[in-house]
Amino acid sequence: MKKALLCLACALVFSQSALAQSKIPRFEAGILLGEPLGLSVKLWYNQFSAADASVAWSFTENGVFEVHADYILHFLKFDFENGVLPIYIGLGPALRIGNEWFIGGRLPVGLSYIFDRLPISLFGEIAPQWQLLPGNKFVLSGGAGIRIALGSAD
Figure 1 (cartoon, rainbow, N blue to C red):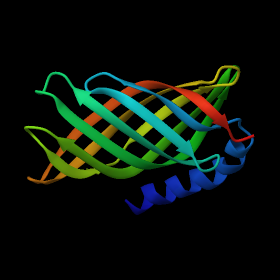
Figure 2 (spheres, rainbow, N blue to C red):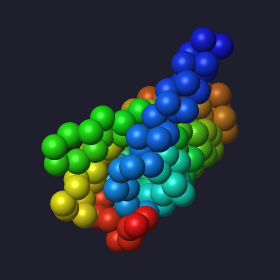
Figure 3 (cartoon, helix red, strand yellow):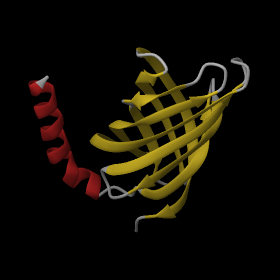
């Protein structure tokens, strides 16, 4: 575990200067596709850290409402001809309201593709969740989506 955290810290430090040269949007809003279906926003603090949040509604689980918010670190970035692909890890709370409710935390790991010439980013993530209340269990969630940049860091 210590080696994994050390590798993550080194990747973050070495990729920080490369991310600083990228054109990263400052605020994005869009949709979270799949089950549940919802809205997603992302606020970039700088070129490698951000916060995201989603509110979603499940149509297959008797109308369950879900919400989560995460602090995100983009620790590795790949440049392409038409955009940039940062990989991220995060941490944040999660809440579900409905017949089967829970309060817990999540650890999302994902990637997003940010287009250079379009105000669009695509994202996908897998997020292990620790559901603390009412029971204590782990579940795996995830999602994919599209966001539109509404502001620029430039």
